[in-house]
Length: 313
Image (cartoon, rainbow, N blue to C red; front, side):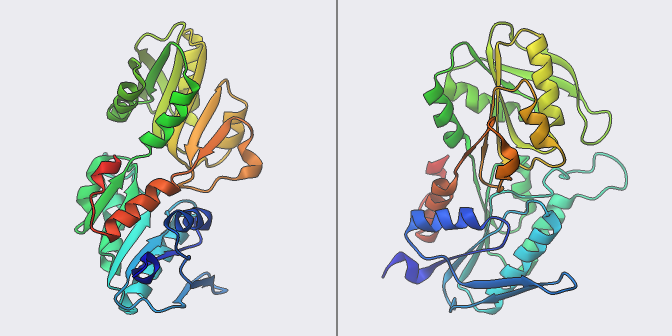
């Protein structure tokens, strides 16, 4: 029996190109699903093929517009569950609402937990995601979670560049574990930014801990939204004598004027992945996209065949 007989991959409207690349890697056709919006904004989903007893994977990052894409994912899960799918895996390359993972002030929600509850209640049996904002979000789910990392894809790119006098830098203390993994595999020293955030979406660089002068610097992060934190770090690094500054992130949210800010900054190059589709007209020459389709495709195949996914880390 061929892989396509039992494994079915469907996609929402958030990132269909990534889904197509994954099906090419797996050698299976993309599942037939009709998705459209009513005039009042409600989402309609219909699965146009038999999925009874099948191993169903639903690809949908909850990227902008986050609320619409999240709701679409929930409806896709519900439709699959009511169509008697054997197992439903929500493939969420970018997990939105991840930044609200704790109560850091009175009377605020923990939306990462809320979204986890919604996905579980809708009927998902498993979640496959990538580079969560914080690892503990896995514990918010009462179903199985496979958590992938784009580090291997990004590191392969920078190894080929063979940058001399390289320092890996975390833009905040919370990202030190991620930066340490990059530094170890690139054979580079580690540095980090000590910052304070006076108001939401704005960052003020206070101090850079580590030797920067005369070095090329690679800033690593899980996501870039407005670019405020990233570009504040770039400015400070150049002022402190860095010869060139590169950046990498898995999830390029790039809201507001982030594209324009990055392309007019002192940043040498920014490497992102395709967990979120980019606006190619605004990306410019500084932003380079690497595909995570082979990594996700291999994880999907291994999950379907009940093989180890940890070997991909």
